[in-house]
Image (cartoon, rainbow, N blue to C red; front, side, top):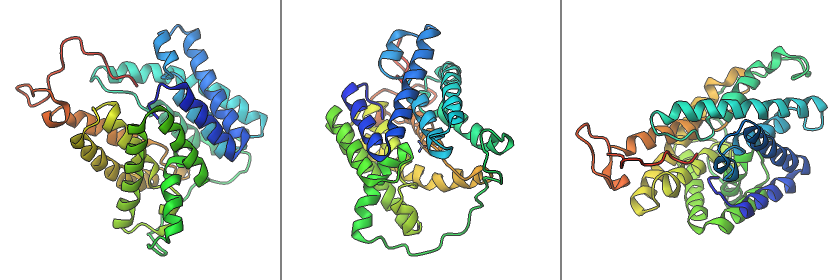
Length: 310
Ligand SMILES: NC(N)=O
């Protein structure tokens, strides 16, 4: 969630544990394994200490816990190996995207989570249930009107689904964690969640899909990234971030449908694709960056400007 704040991390861990202690354990274990692997490979200490080497492994371990059986020893082994591999993939992605001065975001996690879900049916020890994972997309059906109670739960589930969880109170606890670290981040997350709901409703998504949060969690991440993290928080960047949040919401079913043969999980692909596109485009918009555009229309990077953090 873009916060280098240990208290927020502890609150997030408690929030996941409130749903199931094993999810809290996998998330924490994943973060520890990713960070430890990075340290063993002598990745810069500052990257490890700010959590930049732990969030992809945290999400990957949690992904395995939720989609495979969290209690099976083979899931623990797979998550452990996955956390080591995602550290290697992170280094590769960071190096590749640095060429364009772009952040790696959760791209390493998306690559591995997609690879594992696509490959899973081929390996009996990973997917012992037999049968295909395919979930072919159908046309939208069912009611589109959301009762007020479900609207509130959808708002919080747009946060909890970042960590794959359906429980609305996990989203409330995550928001409390965000608030501990940054009032701006909490407000932007709320605006992103509301934008996700509004966009999905305006496009005619079924109420059940809006209510379960699976259409809106990418909107929260995009809003956070584009308003306060990679672009300075300001009214203009907030509007830009909310346009990005709406875009990510519309992109989510596109990704899910493309990945239908492996279960249709969009993971955080909509967030990654939208954020990279909007961040690249922002260099052409001095209103957002406050930097004069170069002759080719792109913003001038100040000499020696540091690469973005994540
Ligand atoms: N992190 C997720 N929900 O892919």
